[in-house]
Image (cartoon, rainbow, N blue to C red; front, top):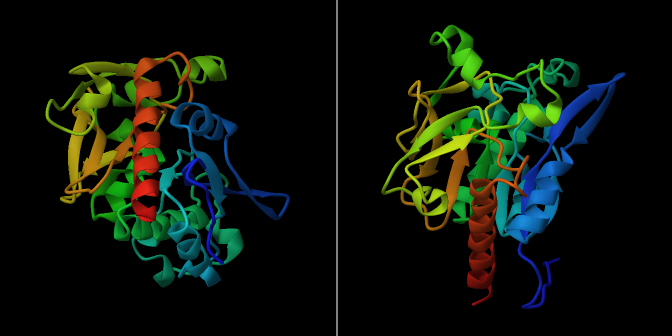
Length: 272
């Protein structure tokens, strides 16, 4: 069956979900903030992509879904990714109970992201990676991560980590500045050489993959945004969370708008 859409229909993007294990029951979940930002600021419709179990590690069903979509969003999550699983999901089977480690690891999500990125790159689809999503792009292309920024550089943990003493909504306020590359894909969106971003992450890019171009850096030198070298469309990841205050933060709004426009252009190009 092929997806039938009129010329006036919205572009449709796939949004990665996460695996949650509660009382022995597996659930796929996603924060509503991503969906609202995509609907109201990117102007696209959403399909939530389910996580992938070890026995389905080839991800054939996910690849079939991806072929019908116009973009991919790699969402953030508290879990640390497992580089071995993300780089070769079919080579690292694990029992369901071991796949999800109480918020520390989420291997079903790693498998989903590996398959989704692989297909999106193969067909030249727009990609927006957010926080964990940027890290997934880096690992997929062969880059490495700092296991813990608290152990990397003095002060980095305070700059990048969560602020548990604040209400949840205030944890997503601006935390530090980033310097934006003047001739990259992000600059026309940011419209400034320095912008303020929020920051809630423990891992971060150590060695940037050669297939990625750095787009922005934090004051401590951490890569905060990167794009795919030679991409036919917008394929970018950011370390911050633009979805949270997208209605009031101009940079966040422009980032989702630019992604939505790329998805619409991709959708129209498929029809002609």
